[in-house]
Length: 140
Ligand code: UDP
Image 1: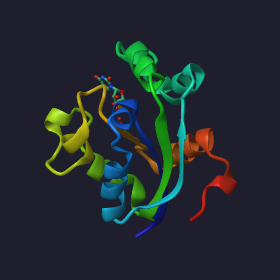
Image 2: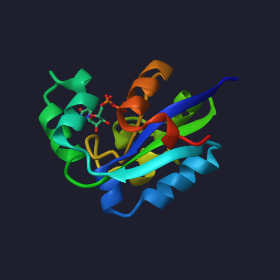
Image 3: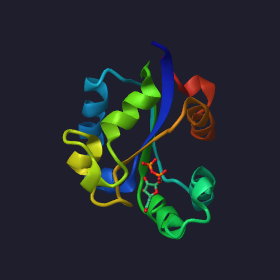
């Protein structure tokens, strides 16, 4: 199995409810290592770039508003099959459909305010990591 890195965001709805530690516990219990982490206020430009793939979707404006409404915690997670493993423990986008025990089932408020982001491929993980971290900030 391949050791991969994935990019994670603990979103405003979760930082607002002081859930960073609880979410990090789920991540670590799943065997993923947090090799970089910082709490930032995402700018509008950063959020628009990050979610550019969704620009034409009806929820885009709301999504950018939400991501810039409060601090987020951006992270790099490392481990075996990290991309797929993190998607698995995050759960489905809509918490109503998320499997029991997943982060979104436990903590998400709605399909929009769904507590976490995780990359959907190794290629996108590398792009997303590079948007927020320089190489010397990642300590594996
Ligand atoms: N989103 C939303 N409404 C929708 C679908 C998505 O507000 O109908 C938001 C939600 O915060 C989601 C993000 O847009 O996490 C990105 O959507 P995507 O389909 O990529 O889901 P994810 O990969 O985060 O599960």
